Amino acid sequence: MAHQAQREEMENKKFIDYKDVPYLRQFTNPHAKILGKKRTGIQASKQREITQAIKRARFMGLLPYLSA
Image 1: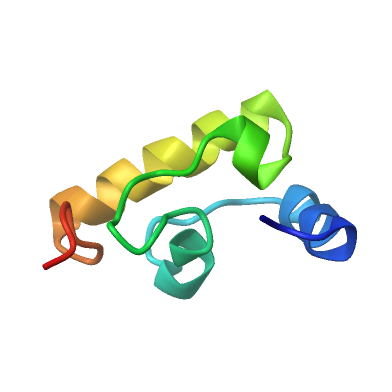
Image 2: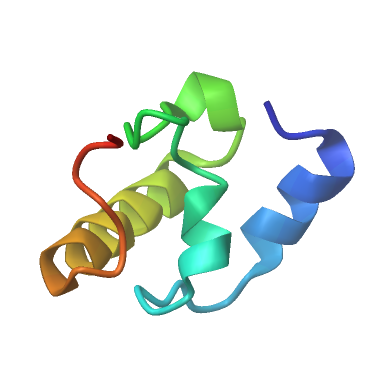
């Protein structure tokens, strides 16, 4: 779960890019599942953008669908 300072940094990011893999990994658990809004503590609109970016990164092969 993100702390308040990390959450503010996450919310203030202007553009969420699917190529920013280290940033997107913060929103997945060790089994490569996307964490929910309650877990991350960010706004719903940002959560939707992050989810879309993670799905794009998975399709492009930058993030795994499943962790082995």
